[in-house]
Amino acid sequence: MSYNAILTLEREHSGFDLADQIHSDLAEYSAVTGIDHLGRAQIIITVPADDLVHAMTTAQLVFSDFTDQIRLDVMTTVEYDRIHP
Image 1 (cartoon, rainbow, N blue to C red):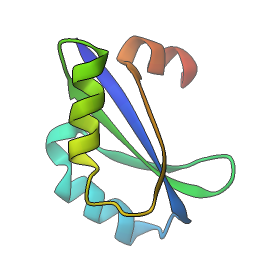
Image 2: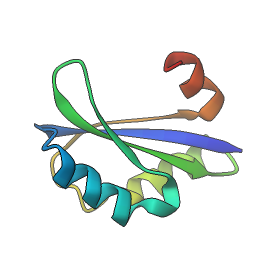
Image 3: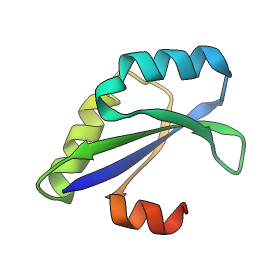
Image 4: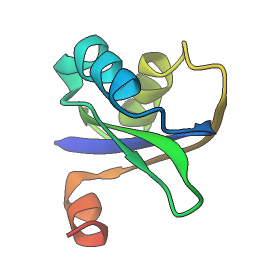
């Protein structure tokens, strides 16, 4: 089963520099970047996992180098697609 993890950072999205870095560093997780409703940077990855706990643990490990984390949401890809059509 696949899950999506959305990491929200305390900083604003810096544009192409952040996007290029994320796409390169996290390519195996089909990473993309975005902006939340408050203008903060977000990183979205797809995680193959057996269950939600496994997906959360994987996301925490993948995102562990980001020191300005303020929120992490993890959900099934079906739920993600429902919320973000």
